[in-house]
Amino acid sequence: MVKFCSLFSGSSGNCLFFGTEQTKILIDAGLSRKAIFNALEQIDQKPDQLKGILLTHEHNDHVRGAGILSRTLDIPIYATEGTWKGCMPVLGEIDEKNMVCIEADKPFEIDDLCIQPYRTPHDANDPVGYCLLAEDKKTVVATDIGKMTRALLKWFEKSDLLFLESNHDIEMLKIGSYPQKLKNRILGDKGHLCNEVAAKTVAYMVKTGVTRVVLGHLSEKNNFKELAYITAVNEMKKEGILPGRDATVEVADRYAVGTLYDL
Image (tube, rainbow, N blue to C red; front, side, top):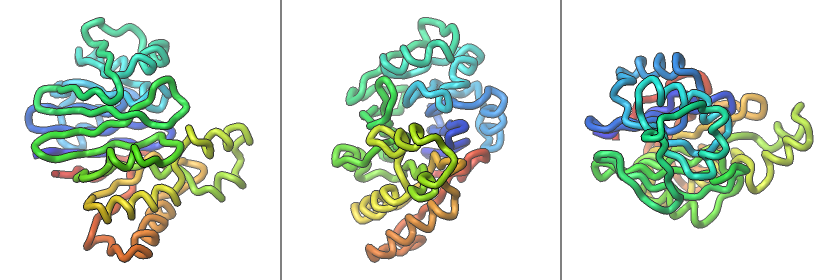
């Protein structure tokens, strides 16, 4: 049985759990060791069974706890060369054997997991998303995305679960308190995905056969769970898709452990 769970998701910290009976990993570790251990305990997972940490990019909300976890558990961190260069000051000293450099578009394996990193449009050194393949199931993690592209949609196809960024409501962001430079960054092609684009992506992917979607990485200041959810649901209904019948859509919490999915 393949399991997936969002432990935390948002600009204050990100950490996802993915695993089989044999192999359990984290995608990103942007919170403290204590917070991540507590979250794992809530879904009956033991930290000492983790086989590694996949990093999407070097921003602090994705890597803050990765170094201490690697040292505590003696497990490898997998990241692109650009991500390694960007996050070393935050990670601290890592045992050389636990520093694994990966490349976008080059699959690799961790025991019975096949992992396919793919490029994402974000303002980081060499950011990636991940397709995770195990037991004939496909899970896709797609956050920190400035724009949707045909190449990304191809990666999402035939996924059993799609974890997709729905970061902000454009109007909330425009009238909010952020400095204009930050607003421009978020709205840019290497920023974050808005609710409207995420919703259109969900509707399109469901029509291609995706049946489970989790919306994540919501902004604390420029979004809220109900708005992200209803934007996606309304777009699905416009396309003749009935939520709950044709597909399930949930929204990951910023600070609380989400649904533990059995795929």
